[in-house]
Image (cartoon, rainbow, N blue to C red; front, side, top):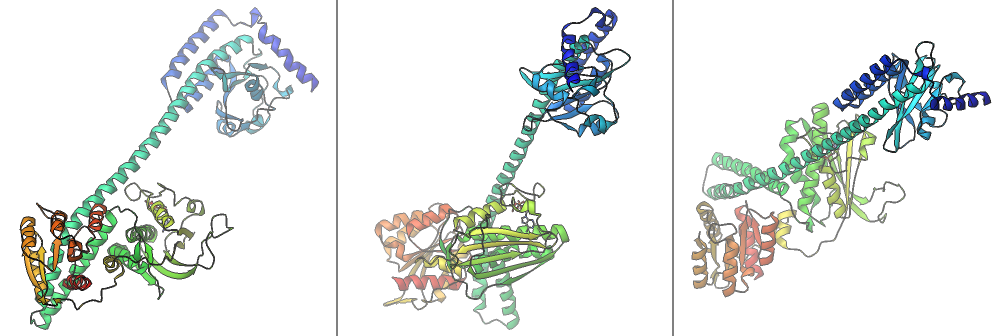
Length: 603
Ligand code: ADP
């Protein structure tokens, strides 16, 4: 060992004292300089790191007349050296070798940031023999120089075995240092370029996601607009058919009309679903029946499920209580989960089975640390379990599916936002959402929300969202005869329908399609009740309300708005401010009559 150390130390004077005979002939020196000049041009012409490194090692062997050359780059995180390029046929074996800083010649060069010349490598204790073993190559002599960028050493260029009987000289070191100086700059440029490319790619992906979300928002707006426009004709279709059915028709005609009503109601359901889905709502808390939300989501996706060969079962608990929640948000959660299950099953097996179960009972949720379930163990919660027979989710992916923008779907098929939105909504409600999955068997999504007792809330919302109906049906006639109503709507067909429906129910009805006429009528006549459309050209329903309220401060108690836009936050806010109840289009004639009677009774 001692002998080897001395041998290594002996080499340093060699570097300082260059004997004239060490210099190659002037012709060889000129050739080498031209070569280096050429190399600098080549190195500046490519930004591909692999190509660069390959050129550098090839040139290094030629200019130093060596058998082989390699480049090792320092991994700043681990402090290890990695062979990034090497000449020779065993290149790939070399490239898998990791070289430690301690106990290697390359490590010595990096630590000391100095060149090193070892003319008897096998005797040098720093020689890292594993590279030789892997390549079945015998290193006799070795010369290495640091790759330096400013004051930082980023790696090493090594050449091995001087060809012929001569040894490496200081001149060889000078030549290799010149090459290494050029190489370091080129390597850094290539790295910066690669970093830039990575950043560009990340930016492009982020932009694509943003565009996708924007597109979704635009599609949502479009869908909402179209759905809204469909509400008036649907109300007319349903209403006129029901009026027709009051006539003495034969059975076959009655049945056909029943079919028209069923189909129109189905269309109305889809329109409502689209409106719910497309609109953004501020969070609200109203009494909701979770089963209604699930059924609405299933109705909306029934076509998709059927056409993708997916059957579904529901196992609903019989005594599901109402709870305070945001119905729009929950519908969105269920639509997302059902849609994901549909995509997973149709993508993997062209079909499958969706099972939706609801339960009541103590929470099953365990926080990820498995220590606690974060909730009082006894408190009963509402649990929804959505199970599919899709391909399942690998365990390493399961922990990431709720991350925003995590998606395994093709662009256009998924944005990776669905589950993160679901997670946000459920958490906002004080609940939990999680998934369990088994590969090839399928996935199960669990949602738990607390049961929150009902606040005394507006009955209109109960009617809309829980399916409860008002039981007051006897108030059509006021004490001194039939109640007198004014109906305001700009759609002549709808006006005609409303008028006929209300007259049939025993009311006296005046109609107008214009706001100014409505105000005049309201000044002249003390109507018992006003039914007024919200969105009308010229004067809107809300403007009529504001002006008429100056004469009748308690107008909110005797006016019902009709709107196709109950789910738009702006409309909802304005309607809430008036304090008047509203009917969402499309509605059935008996819903209108019930609401009118209910309000007259309440007064
Ligand atoms: P997206 O559907 O837009 O990809 P999500 O947040 O809804 O975004 O879902 C994220 C990822 O979770 C999906 O890309 C998919 O890999 C996985 N995933 C969600 N639901 C299921 C499911 N039922 N079966 C298998 N994988 C699913």
